[in-house]
Length: 412
Ligand SMILES: C[S@@+](CC[C@H](N)C(=O)[O-])C[C@H]1O[C@@H](n2cnc3c(N)ncnc32)[C@H](O)[C@@H]1O
Image (cartoon, rainbow, N blue to C red; front, side):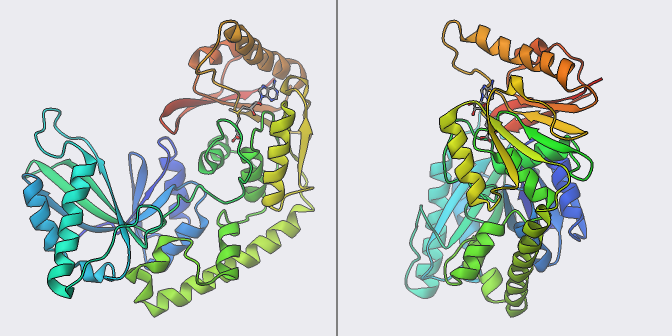
Protein backbone atom coordinates (compact mmCIF):
# COMPACT_ATOMS: atom_id res chain seq x y z
CA UNK A 1 0.00 0.00 0.00
CA UNK A 2 1.26 3.44 -0.90
CA UNK A 3 1.62 6.55 1.10
CA UNK A 4 0.13 9.54 -0.65
CA UNK A 5 2.01 12.67 -1.52
CA UNK A 6 -1.19 14.65 -1.20
CA UNK A 7 -3.34 14.21 1.84
CA UNK A 8 -6.67 15.64 0.75
CA UNK A 9 -8.88 15.81 -2.29
CA UNK A 10 -11.54 18.47 -2.76
CA UNK A 11 -14.08 17.69 -5.49
CA UNK A 12 -15.91 20.35 -7.49
CA UNK A 13 -18.08 20.73 -10.60
CA UNK A 14 -16.03 20.20 -13.78
CA UNK A 15 -14.88 23.60 -15.04
CA UNK A 16 -14.31 25.11 -11.61
CA UNK A 17 -11.02 23.37 -10.84
CA UNK A 18 -8.93 26.52 -11.36
CA UNK A 19 -11.22 28.58 -9.19
CA UNK A 20 -11.03 25.91 -6.49
CA UNK A 21 -7.24 25.75 -6.74
CA UNK A 22 -6.97 29.51 -6.19
CA UNK A 23 -9.36 29.31 -3.27
CA UNK A 24 -7.49 26.45 -1.60
CA UNK A 25 -4.10 28.10 -2.16
CA UNK A 26 -5.36 31.29 -0.56
CA UNK A 27 -6.13 29.32 2.62
CA UNK A 28 -2.51 28.36 3.30
CA UNK A 29 -2.06 24.94 1.72
CA UNK A 30 1.51 23.75 1.17
CA UNK A 31 1.01 22.28 -2.25
CA UNK A 32 -1.97 21.71 -4.48
CA UNK A 33 -2.62 20.36 -7.95
CA UNK A 34 -5.60 20.14 -10.24
CA UNK A 35 -7.16 16.91 -11.42
CA UNK A 36 -10.40 16.66 -13.42
CA UNK A 37 -13.25 17.47 -11.10
CA UNK A 38 -11.14 18.59 -8.16
CA UNK A 39 -7.93 19.56 -6.45
CA UNK A 40 -5.51 17.40 -4.43
CA UNK A 41 -3.71 19.26 -1.72
CA UNK A 42 -1.25 18.90 1.10
CA UNK A 43 -2.07 20.81 4.24
CA UNK A 44 -2.04 20.80 8.01
CA UNK A 45 -5.23 19.18 9.33
CA UNK A 46 -6.54 22.50 10.64
CA UNK A 47 -6.22 23.98 7.13
CA UNK A 48 -8.32 21.12 5.80
CA UNK A 49 -11.01 22.05 8.32
CA UNK A 50 -10.75 25.65 7.18
CA UNK A 51 -11.22 24.55 3.57
CA UNK A 52 -14.39 22.67 4.56
CA UNK A 53 -15.89 25.69 6.32
CA UNK A 54 -14.73 28.37 3.89
CA UNK A 55 -14.81 26.91 0.39
CA UNK A 56 -17.49 28.33 -1.88
CA UNK A 57 -16.53 26.06 -4.77
CA UNK A 58 -15.81 22.54 -3.46
CA UNK A 59 -18.56 19.93 -3.33
CA UNK A 60 -16.80 17.69 -0.81
CA UNK A 61 -13.42 17.25 0.85
CA UNK A 62 -11.87 13.80 1.30
CA UNK A 63 -8.84 12.58 3.18
CA UNK A 64 -6.70 10.16 1.21
CA UNK A 65 -6.23 6.88 3.10
CA UNK A 66 -4.67 4.13 1.00
CA UNK A 67 -3.80 3.24 -2.53
CA UNK A 68 -3.07 -0.23 -3.86
CA UNK A 69 -3.24 -2.19 -7.07
CA UNK A 70 -5.08 -5.47 -7.58
CA UNK A 71 -5.68 -8.06 -10.29
CA UNK A 72 -9.29 -8.79 -9.44
CA UNK A 73 -12.07 -8.43 -6.88
CA UNK A 74 -10.79 -11.32 -4.78
CA UNK A 75 -7.44 -9.48 -4.39
CA UNK A 76 -9.38 -6.35 -3.53
CA UNK A 77 -11.04 -8.11 -0.60
CA UNK A 78 -7.70 -9.51 0.62
CA UNK A 79 -5.88 -6.18 0.37
CA UNK A 80 -8.73 -4.43 2.15
CA UNK A 81 -8.66 -6.85 5.10
CA UNK A 82 -5.03 -5.75 5.64
CA UNK A 83 -6.11 -2.18 6.38
CA UNK A 84 -6.16 -1.15 10.04
CA UNK A 85 -9.85 -0.24 10.04
CA UNK A 86 -9.78 0.23 13.81
CA UNK A 87 -7.87 3.47 13.31
CA UNK A 88 -10.52 4.74 10.89
CA UNK A 89 -13.73 3.94 12.78
CA UNK A 90 -15.08 2.40 15.97
CA UNK A 91 -16.93 -0.89 15.90
CA UNK A 92 -20.05 0.79 17.33
CA UNK A 93 -20.11 3.39 14.57
CA UNK A 94 -22.18 3.02 11.41
CA UNK A 95 -20.66 3.36 7.95
CA UNK A 96 -21.45 3.69 4.26
CA UNK A 97 -19.37 2.88 1.20
CA UNK A 98 -19.38 4.62 -2.16
CA UNK A 99 -17.47 3.43 -5.21
CA UNK A 100 -16.73 5.46 -8.31
CA UNK A 101 -14.94 4.23 -11.40
CA UNK A 102 -12.32 6.26 -13.24
CA UNK A 103 -10.85 5.32 -16.57
CA UNK A 104 -11.08 1.49 -16.87
CA UNK A 105 -10.57 -0.96 -19.75
CA UNK A 106 -13.86 -1.24 -21.65
CA UNK A 107 -13.74 -5.02 -21.96
CA UNK A 108 -13.02 -5.47 -18.26
CA UNK A 109 -14.07 -8.71 -16.58
CA UNK A 110 -13.87 -7.41 -13.03
CA UNK A 111 -15.26 -4.36 -11.27
CA UNK A 112 -18.33 -4.27 -13.44
CA UNK A 113 -20.60 -2.63 -10.96
CA UNK A 114 -20.14 -0.41 -7.95
CA UNK A 115 -22.65 -2.32 -5.81
CA UNK A 116 -20.62 -5.52 -6.08
CA UNK A 117 -17.37 -3.62 -5.36
CA UNK A 118 -19.01 -2.04 -2.31
CA UNK A 119 -20.00 -5.52 -1.16
CA UNK A 120 -16.40 -6.77 -1.39
CA UNK A 121 -15.14 -3.84 0.64
CA UNK A 122 -17.95 -4.19 3.17
CA UNK A 123 -17.08 -7.90 3.64
CA UNK A 124 -13.45 -6.95 4.25
CA UNK A 125 -14.38 -4.35 6.89
CA UNK A 126 -16.89 -6.60 8.63
CA UNK A 127 -14.52 -9.60 8.64
CA UNK A 128 -11.70 -7.43 9.98
CA UNK A 129 -13.78 -6.23 12.92
CA UNK A 130 -15.21 -9.69 13.63
CA UNK A 131 -11.68 -11.04 13.77
CA UNK A 132 -10.18 -8.33 15.99
CA UNK A 133 -13.15 -7.16 18.06
CA UNK A 134 -15.57 -10.08 17.97
CA UNK A 135 -18.36 -7.90 16.59
CA UNK A 136 -19.06 -5.90 13.45
CA UNK A 137 -20.11 -2.32 12.67
CA UNK A 138 -23.41 -1.77 10.86
CA UNK A 139 -24.16 -0.12 7.57
CA UNK A 140 -26.33 2.99 7.57
CA UNK A 141 -27.16 4.31 4.11
CA UNK A 142 -29.00 7.44 5.29
CA UNK A 143 -26.98 8.97 8.07
CA UNK A 144 -23.77 7.04 8.71
CA UNK A 145 -21.04 8.14 11.12
CA UNK A 146 -18.28 7.35 8.66
CA UNK A 147 -18.30 7.38 4.85
CA UNK A 148 -15.57 5.83 2.71
CA UNK A 149 -15.10 6.42 -0.99
CA UNK A 150 -13.26 3.94 -3.20
CA UNK A 151 -12.09 5.18 -6.60
CA UNK A 152 -11.17 2.34 -8.92
CA UNK A 153 -9.28 2.98 -12.14
CA UNK A 154 -6.70 1.49 -14.47
CA UNK A 155 -3.55 0.41 -12.60
CA UNK A 156 0.12 0.74 -13.60
CA UNK A 157 1.60 -2.60 -12.54
CA UNK A 158 -1.64 -4.52 -12.04
CA UNK A 159 -4.88 -4.05 -13.98
CA UNK A 160 -6.74 -2.04 -11.32
CA UNK A 161 -5.76 0.72 -8.94
CA UNK A 162 -7.86 1.41 -5.84
CA UNK A 163 -7.77 4.70 -3.95
CA UNK A 164 -9.54 4.73 -0.61
CA UNK A 165 -10.66 8.02 0.86
CA UNK A 166 -12.51 9.22 3.93
CA UNK A 167 -15.38 11.60 3.14
CA UNK A 168 -14.98 14.40 5.67
CA UNK A 169 -18.24 16.13 4.76
CA UNK A 170 -21.29 13.87 4.54
CA UNK A 171 -23.89 16.13 2.95
CA UNK A 172 -22.32 18.08 0.05
CA UNK A 173 -20.85 21.44 1.03
CA UNK A 174 -22.94 23.04 -1.71
CA UNK A 175 -25.99 22.51 0.52
CA UNK A 176 -25.59 25.73 2.48
CA UNK A 177 -28.99 25.33 4.14
CA UNK A 178 -30.82 28.45 2.89
CA UNK A 179 -32.74 26.75 0.11
CA UNK A 180 -35.82 25.82 2.10
CA UNK A 181 -38.28 26.47 -0.71
CA UNK A 182 -37.80 24.35 -3.81
CA UNK A 183 -38.08 25.65 -7.36
CA UNK A 184 -37.51 24.00 -10.73
CA UNK A 185 -33.95 23.43 -11.98
CA UNK A 186 -32.07 25.32 -9.25
CA UNK A 187 -28.32 25.68 -9.61
CA UNK A 188 -26.13 24.05 -7.01
CA UNK A 189 -24.91 26.78 -4.66
CA UNK A 190 -21.25 26.14 -5.49
CA UNK A 191 -22.01 26.38 -9.23
CA UNK A 192 -23.66 29.77 -8.60
CA UNK A 193 -20.63 30.95 -6.60
CA UNK A 194 -18.39 29.60 -9.37
CA UNK A 195 -20.27 31.61 -12.02
CA UNK A 196 -19.65 34.82 -10.10
CA UNK A 197 -16.00 33.97 -9.79
CA UNK A 198 -15.60 33.04 -13.47
CA UNK A 199 -17.33 36.27 -14.46
CA UNK A 200 -14.89 38.15 -12.16
CA UNK A 201 -17.75 39.92 -10.41
CA UNK A 202 -16.39 42.48 -7.97
CA UNK A 203 -18.97 43.81 -5.50
CA UNK A 204 -16.81 46.86 -4.84
CA UNK A 205 -17.13 48.10 -8.40
CA UNK A 206 -20.27 46.47 -9.80
CA UNK A 207 -23.87 45.90 -8.83
CA UNK A 208 -25.58 42.62 -9.67
CA UNK A 209 -28.85 41.75 -11.34
CA UNK A 210 -29.81 38.06 -11.21
CA UNK A 211 -32.57 38.57 -13.73
CA UNK A 212 -34.19 35.09 -13.70
CA UNK A 213 -33.51 34.27 -10.14
CA UNK A 214 -35.50 31.06 -9.51
CA UNK A 215 -34.55 30.13 -5.96
CA UNK A 216 -32.27 33.22 -5.73
CA UNK A 217 -29.11 31.12 -5.54
CA UNK A 218 -26.89 33.47 -7.56
CA UNK A 219 -28.08 36.57 -5.71
CA UNK A 220 -27.63 34.94 -2.28
CA UNK A 221 -24.14 33.67 -3.13
CA UNK A 222 -23.31 37.17 -4.39
CA UNK A 223 -24.36 38.77 -1.11
CA UNK A 224 -22.31 36.23 0.87
CA UNK A 225 -19.28 37.02 -1.29
CA UNK A 226 -19.84 40.79 -1.00
CA UNK A 227 -19.89 40.55 2.80
CA UNK A 228 -17.20 37.87 3.17
CA UNK A 229 -19.69 35.65 4.97
CA UNK A 230 -18.39 32.08 5.06
CA UNK A 231 -20.67 29.79 3.04
CA UNK A 232 -20.95 27.41 6.01
CA UNK A 233 -22.59 30.13 8.14
CA UNK A 234 -25.97 28.44 8.61
CA UNK A 235 -24.42 25.06 9.35
CA UNK A 236 -22.08 26.71 11.84
CA UNK A 237 -25.02 28.41 13.56
CA UNK A 238 -26.58 24.99 14.03
CA UNK A 239 -23.30 23.47 15.23
CA UNK A 240 -23.07 26.16 17.90
CA UNK A 241 -26.70 25.67 18.91
CA UNK A 242 -26.57 21.86 18.94
CA UNK A 243 -22.98 20.80 19.71
CA UNK A 244 -23.92 17.12 19.84
CA UNK A 245 -25.57 17.08 16.43
CA UNK A 246 -23.32 15.85 13.61
CA UNK A 247 -23.31 18.31 10.71
CA UNK A 248 -20.11 17.26 8.95
CA UNK A 249 -18.91 13.69 8.93
CA UNK A 250 -15.47 14.56 10.25
CA UNK A 251 -17.13 15.32 13.60
CA UNK A 252 -17.57 11.60 14.22
CA UNK A 253 -14.30 10.50 12.69
CA UNK A 254 -11.28 9.37 14.75
CA UNK A 255 -9.40 11.82 12.49
CA UNK A 256 -10.88 14.60 14.64
CA UNK A 257 -11.91 12.79 17.80
CA UNK A 258 -8.44 11.46 18.57
CA UNK A 259 -6.73 14.81 18.00
CA UNK A 260 -7.47 17.22 20.85
CA UNK A 261 -5.53 20.04 19.16
CA UNK A 262 -7.69 19.68 16.05
CA UNK A 263 -10.87 19.49 18.13
CA UNK A 264 -9.93 22.72 19.85
CA UNK A 265 -9.12 24.27 16.50
CA UNK A 266 -12.53 23.27 15.19
CA UNK A 267 -14.23 25.11 18.07
CA UNK A 268 -12.13 28.20 17.32
CA UNK A 269 -13.06 28.02 13.66
CA UNK A 270 -16.76 27.84 14.54
CA UNK A 271 -16.41 30.96 16.64
CA UNK A 272 -14.52 32.69 13.84
CA UNK A 273 -17.20 31.86 11.27
CA UNK A 274 -19.86 33.15 13.67
CA UNK A 275 -18.04 36.45 14.19
CA UNK A 276 -17.38 36.93 10.49
CA UNK A 277 -21.05 36.24 9.74
CA UNK A 278 -22.30 38.86 12.17
CA UNK A 279 -19.73 41.41 10.96
CA UNK A 280 -20.55 40.58 7.34
CA UNK A 281 -24.30 40.95 7.82
CA UNK A 282 -23.74 44.32 9.51
CA UNK A 283 -21.50 45.48 6.65
CA UNK A 284 -24.17 44.65 4.08
CA UNK A 285 -26.32 47.49 5.34
CA UNK A 286 -23.70 49.80 3.81
CA UNK A 287 -23.32 47.88 0.56
CA UNK A 288 -22.69 50.49 -2.14
CA UNK A 289 -23.62 48.47 -5.22
CA UNK A 290 -27.05 46.88 -5.15
CA UNK A 291 -27.81 43.19 -5.54
CA UNK A 292 -31.16 42.66 -7.25
CA UNK A 293 -32.95 39.38 -7.87
CA UNK A 294 -35.78 39.34 -10.37
CA UNK A 295 -38.29 36.60 -11.22
CA UNK A 296 -41.26 36.43 -13.56
CA UNK A 297 -43.29 33.66 -11.95
CA UNK A 298 -45.19 34.80 -8.87
CA UNK A 299 -45.00 31.38 -7.24
CA UNK A 300 -41.23 31.17 -7.75
CA UNK A 301 -40.86 34.77 -6.53
CA UNK A 302 -42.30 33.73 -3.15
CA UNK A 303 -39.90 30.77 -2.97
CA UNK A 304 -36.99 33.12 -3.64
CA UNK A 305 -38.30 35.39 -0.87
CA UNK A 306 -38.34 32.48 1.60
CA UNK A 307 -34.78 31.50 0.72
CA UNK A 308 -33.51 35.06 1.02
CA UNK A 309 -35.15 35.29 4.45
CA UNK A 310 -33.59 32.01 5.55
CA UNK A 311 -30.18 33.32 4.42
CA UNK A 312 -30.75 36.40 6.66
CA UNK A 313 -30.54 38.64 3.59
CA UNK A 314 -34.02 40.18 3.66
CA UNK A 315 -33.76 43.87 2.88
CA UNK A 316 -30.26 43.38 1.48
CA UNK A 317 -31.15 41.61 -1.75
CA UNK A 318 -33.83 43.58 -3.55
CA UNK A 319 -36.34 41.09 -4.94
CA UNK A 320 -38.55 42.17 -7.84
CA UNK A 321 -41.39 40.44 -9.68
CA UNK A 322 -41.30 41.00 -13.41
CA UNK A 323 -39.97 40.12 -16.81
CA UNK A 324 -36.18 40.04 -17.26
CA UNK A 325 -36.75 41.73 -20.58
CA UNK A 326 -38.11 44.82 -18.78
CA UNK A 327 -35.23 45.20 -16.31
CA UNK A 328 -32.83 48.15 -16.13
CA UNK A 329 -29.33 48.59 -14.68
CA UNK A 330 -29.42 49.21 -10.94
CA UNK A 331 -26.00 50.84 -10.48
CA UNK A 332 -23.47 52.75 -12.60
CA UNK A 333 -21.96 49.41 -13.45
CA UNK A 334 -24.10 46.31 -13.29
CA UNK A 335 -23.41 42.69 -14.05
CA UNK A 336 -26.63 41.29 -15.58
CA UNK A 337 -26.29 37.60 -14.86
CA UNK A 338 -28.89 35.03 -15.78
CA UNK A 339 -29.57 31.35 -15.95
CA UNK A 340 -32.54 31.10 -18.34
CA UNK A 341 -34.41 27.85 -18.96
CA UNK A 342 -32.45 25.56 -21.32
CA UNK A 343 -35.60 24.04 -22.81
CA UNK A 344 -34.70 20.36 -22.40
CA UNK A 345 -38.13 18.88 -23.05
CA UNK A 346 -39.81 21.38 -25.34
CA UNK A 347 -43.43 21.03 -26.44
CA UNK A 348 -44.37 22.19 -29.97
CA UNK A 349 -44.28 25.98 -30.15
CA UNK A 350 -42.09 26.35 -27.07
CA UNK A 351 -38.88 26.55 -29.06
CA UNK A 352 -40.10 29.80 -30.62
CA UNK A 353 -40.85 31.15 -27.15
CA UNK A 354 -37.37 30.22 -25.94
CA UNK A 355 -35.79 31.83 -29.00
CA UNK A 356 -37.74 35.02 -28.33
CA UNK A 357 -36.43 35.01 -24.75
CA UNK A 358 -32.76 34.60 -25.73
CA UNK A 359 -33.05 37.08 -28.59
CA UNK A 360 -34.90 39.46 -26.26
CA UNK A 361 -31.97 39.33 -23.83
CA UNK A 362 -29.51 40.33 -26.57
CA UNK A 363 -31.78 43.19 -27.64
CA UNK A 364 -32.34 44.40 -24.10
CA UNK A 365 -28.62 44.45 -23.39
CA UNK A 366 -27.91 46.32 -26.61
CA UNK A 367 -30.45 49.03 -25.84
CA UNK A 368 -30.60 49.35 -22.06
CA UNK A 369 -27.32 48.01 -20.69
CA UNK A 370 -24.71 49.94 -22.67
CA UNK A 371 -21.53 50.28 -20.59
CA UNK A 372 -22.51 47.35 -18.35
CA UNK A 373 -21.68 43.64 -18.53
CA UNK A 374 -23.76 40.52 -19.01
CA UNK A 375 -23.13 36.85 -18.25
CA UNK A 376 -25.42 34.11 -19.46
CA UNK A 377 -25.27 30.52 -18.20
CA UNK A 378 -26.94 27.89 -20.32
CA UNK A 379 -26.75 24.30 -21.52
CA UNK A 380 -28.44 25.19 -24.81
CA UNK A 381 -25.69 26.15 -27.27
CA UNK A 382 -28.15 26.83 -30.12
CA UNK A 383 -29.84 29.48 -28.01
CA UNK A 384 -26.53 31.17 -27.31
CA UNK A 385 -26.28 31.92 -31.02
CA UNK A 386 -29.77 33.42 -30.95
CA UNK A 387 -28.62 36.11 -28.47
CA UNK A 388 -26.88 37.72 -31.45
CA UNK A 389 -24.08 39.51 -29.58
CA UNK A 390 -20.35 38.89 -29.60
CA UNK A 391 -19.13 37.20 -26.43
CA UNK A 392 -16.03 38.55 -24.71
CA UNK A 393 -15.30 35.22 -22.98
CA UNK A 394 -16.77 31.75 -22.79
CA UNK A 395 -16.24 29.22 -20.01
CA UNK A 396 -17.13 25.55 -20.06
CA UNK A 397 -18.77 24.44 -16.86
CA UNK A 398 -20.79 21.37 -15.92
CA UNK A 399 -24.12 21.77 -14.19
CA UNK A 400 -24.62 18.22 -12.86
CA UNK A 401 -24.41 16.02 -15.95
CA UNK A 402 -25.08 18.84 -18.40
CA UNK A 403 -22.15 20.52 -20.10
CA UNK A 404 -22.92 24.22 -20.09
CA UNK A 405 -21.40 27.53 -21.12
CA UNK A 406 -21.03 30.75 -19.24
CA UNK A 407 -20.92 33.40 -21.95
CA UNK A 408 -19.71 36.87 -21.00
CA UNK A 409 -20.56 40.06 -22.87
CA UNK A 410 -19.06 43.55 -22.64
CA UNK A 411 -21.88 45.82 -23.69
CA UNK A 412 -20.95 48.94 -25.65
C1 LIG B 1 -33.27 27.68 -14.83
S1 LIG B 1 -34.28 28.60 -13.76
C2 LIG B 1 -33.14 29.55 -12.80
C3 LIG B 1 -32.60 28.81 -11.66
C4 LIG B 1 -31.86 29.67 -10.67
N1 LIG B 1 -30.55 30.09 -11.16
C5 LIG B 1 -31.73 28.93 -9.35
O1 LIG B 1 -30.60 28.65 -8.91
O2 LIG B 1 -32.75 28.56 -8.79
C6 LIG B 1 -34.96 29.83 -14.79
C7 LIG B 1 -35.90 30.80 -14.08
O3 LIG B 1 -36.20 31.86 -14.97
C8 LIG B 1 -37.56 32.24 -14.78
N2 LIG B 1 -37.95 32.95 -16.01
C9 LIG B 1 -38.26 32.44 -17.23
N3 LIG B 1 -38.51 33.43 -18.11
C10 LIG B 1 -38.33 34.61 -17.46
C11 LIG B 1 -38.42 35.96 -17.82
N4 LIG B 1 -38.75 36.33 -19.07
N5 LIG B 1 -38.18 36.89 -16.89
C12 LIG B 1 -37.84 36.56 -15.63
N6 LIG B 1 -37.76 35.28 -15.21
C13 LIG B 1 -38.00 34.30 -16.11
C14 LIG B 1 -38.25 30.93 -14.52
O4 LIG B 1 -39.48 31.14 -13.85
C15 LIG B 1 -37.23 30.20 -13.67
O5 LIG B 1 -37.44 30.46 -12.30
